Length: 120
Image (cartoon, rainbow, N blue to C red):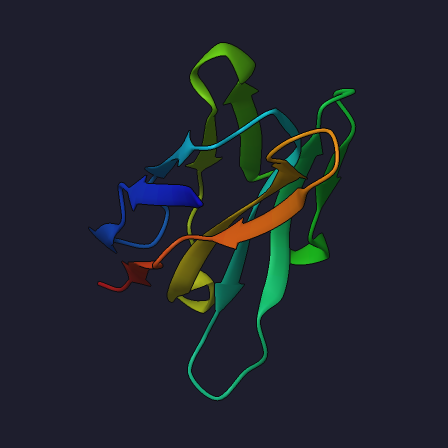
């Protein structure tokens, strides 16, 4: 089992900043990709940002230039720095980690979600 614990969500005014943290623990042999997705009410879950173990990043179009993803491989941790937040960024944000529990076993785990609300 691989568990993800997220933190850092909350209420922020438009133009403000928040940082989301996600720590992975459990039976981990290797982590490949770490990322963040979000789901707003009535909408499908969408990619916010992802970072693979070779340093390749992938951002959703709506957050490019405002959000930054980073990770600490030694601590199995991924962060999402969100700047210049807009009301349309309001959603539940989910951490996602993909890797291997052993040489033969893959895993793909999701966090429980953390609410981000951007409102004045």
